[in-house]
Image 1 (cartoon, rainbow, N blue to C red):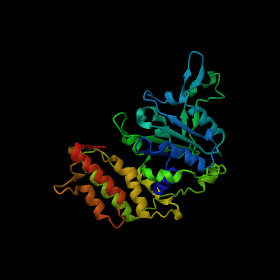
Image 2: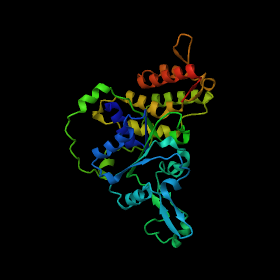
Image 3: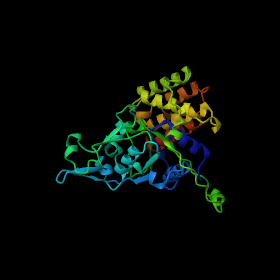
Image 4: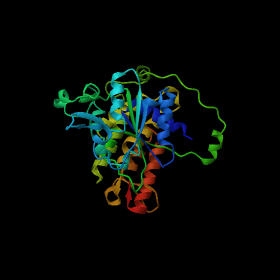
Length: 343
């Protein structure tokens, strides 16, 4: 049972970002949402790949494969990711979805490193290297597995994460490139309403050109002066704190793209959309010890939010009610008070 606002957040994020990460408790339907989205687009199962992440993954060879130098044959990994990249390159008119399930069971900065640097490129540099191109003439199955494969825009990359003691935390290298959406868990009593419902009608397959007709790619920033002023103020207090984090130009550009892609009939105002993006792109960086966060965020003696960050949100309250942002700030401040640390 998904909330409408989470479905809209996911849809807009997929349209505006190359990497969308779903966070939440185990069993909230994170990976299922990805497959349901694929079904809604009418994609056949072979074009939607859910890859369970293994704790042993250390580099991209674990998810792509490796070149057997003894036999000069490229041996793809059992994830099937190299095959999907190849198929997507051969059929640029088709849409594909990849989901790294429980993405932070291993260090994504290691096994996902190539993709991190490639996904945000807007030129012909969107290629994934399988092996050294200089060796390609000697590789027997080079026609099937060339040294490089494009990571085309027709591949939608997603991931899911659980946050507990068995997982790794993402670095800013990942967070700067992803929309992180925390799913809200529905009520158990609502599960009864799902029983007896007819199976959904299979939708016709949506092609990549059809999908991207709905994506608005504007050149230059379209955010208002006050919105940019708000981000500058928030960036300043973050940099003045001890968390060693800030808001980069990439984040602002992607936030701008997100705001431009809100569907007109979604019922989401620009202020709500801005609030969503602050939570998904900026507040994920609000983490660390109470000593690091003390100037940025804390609770006063009366249990009310205090610090430079709440002051910024209050000052720019005309832009948005920042309902979700205040909720996240309160949760993080509470964790700081109880545990002297927040994630």
